[in-house]
Amino acid sequence: MHVTGRRERSATWKSVNSESLLYFRVCSDRMREVFAREERNHENMMQSRTHTCNALRLSDAGSQVTLVGWFENIRQVSKNLGFLQLRDFYGVTQIVFETEEMMERLEGVNKESTLLVEGTVRERSNKTNTIPTGEIEVVPCRVEVLGKCTNNVLPFEIRQSKNADENIRLKYRYLDLRNPEVKDKILLRSHIVTELRQRMNDLDFVEITTPILTCSSPEGARDYLVPARNHPGKFYALPQAPQQFKQILMASGFDRYFQIAPCFRDEDARADRSPGEFYQLDMEMAFASQEDVFSVIEQVLPPVFEKYGVYDQASSAPFVRIPYLEALEKYGTDKPDLRIDLVVQDVTELFGQLDFVPFKDHMIKAVVTDGYTATRKEIDKMCADVEVETGNKAYWFRVDENGSYVGGISKFLAERKEEVDKLLGLKPGDFVGVTAGDKNAAVKTSGVLRRMLGMKSEGHFRQACYEFCWIVDFPMYEIGEESGEMEFCHNPFSMPQGGMQALETMEPLTILAYQYDLVCNGVELSSGAVRNHDPEIMVKAFQLVGLGEEDVKAKFPAMYNAFCYGAPPHAGIAPGVDRMVMLLAGEDSIREVIPFPMNKQAQDIMMGAPAQVDERQLRDVHIEIKMPKEEK
Image (cartoon, rainbow, N blue to C red; front, side):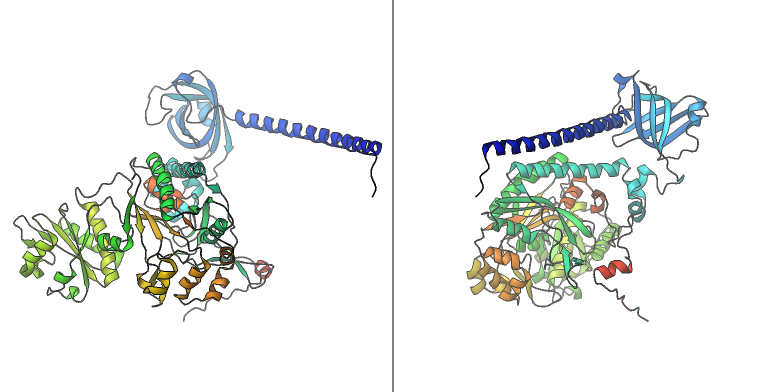
């Protein structure tokens, strides 16, 4: 073995050090140049404006300023007098043109061009409190067009964009987002996400990002598939949720995980659901129970809702807990709006005896309110709205001031009036809505009727608050409406209550799961569960829906194998960020709080997606397009 001598080593190190020092000197000189250039660029950037369009106040009168922004509007009084509104991200400042020469600077300049304005701040004679800068105005000495708007006709007025057709708004989303009202919703979203992230960090959760390209997994919706160029005939899938990855993280020894996770599902749009892509506050906890998850959510969400919501009141811990079957029975839905204090009552036994054909051999539900004083026209409109939403009719009658039944189906109740009064506790002035049908139809329709009556009944709807509740004890299994076979009711990865013993000894449709939904003001924010971390229980649970051990290993190989190496009990949940922001912003449509949403047909009409690709791209990924044949 060769041993380097001290002198040899010293010479070597001197050589290395000399080269290293030279290298570091060169790097340092280059870095100094970079830093100096960045500093100059930063100074130049700041020199483009001294203030934002929301910053100037009366105390700035007499100051020389430089503003930049969009040419929003101008009120031209004469050829030498005009009042221009300059708008940037932060607000609006009035610019006063007082000479013909300055007015000529704007000739041929269209609204929504970007301008630089240098001038002097002065007190405004016609002050206004409608904007923070309403006490001042700027008299310009220089105006420069920074970016021309080449179209002299806009698709819509910027501040009126929310009144435009939705597809036009989405096509010109970059103009729509200039509307301060629209922009503020996106800014609100940013603040909420920041707050959620901070609160999760404060509770010792670790933020970990999980893969976007993964394998297809049966999550309940259609996957978005991505062809694998180097693996002909095989596909990646965009994750419907990070479900398997976060459970594998628990098996990997991470104790508390979260991320603001993108999820991808090929499903139809609704008012509270965006097609394609959405985001959720995804979290999972090791060695945790249902109670641990509830505790975290009840610490994190109420302060955020109170701080950023249109209402400043939110449920405090603990949230109301309602078993799934009780929610259907009492509220006609598993997403009850608890701001409404009306309840659904089952009247099948009595009303089924009436001589009224729609009630024969059906389940019958009733909702009673003493605060609904609508006209016949208004009642008919409400019943029509119920039918549009549910596909089922709603019926009604009223108790007049003498205690008699009037209107609707009242004539069919006359002979059983005493029994009906006793069953429903009726008194003069009460209004009764009634639904009938098979079990699912009667329940669903009663829930919609309860909601509509509650919102229209005086004294039964406490609107200005956020009412949270947990829906718990979901059935583990159900009979699928389309398949007619046993299916998982909620989440296939959930732990059955009673574990293996329940799976082996109980009728499957009676088994409950440790599954839960978080609901706020009638909107489902999230589903969650205590996970099935035991491979033997997992295999048994899937056997009941016709899938054997080999199927489980094939469909979920990584998670199944990870659990075979000693997985901790774990539980989690994933509240939807988009729905949270929608509620907090007081919007009815989720698209109002997403920067670049798709339309109802899952199209991004601003970017032109989905779009055709050329033949070469298809060959690269070994795909041939076969269009469906047109029907003759």
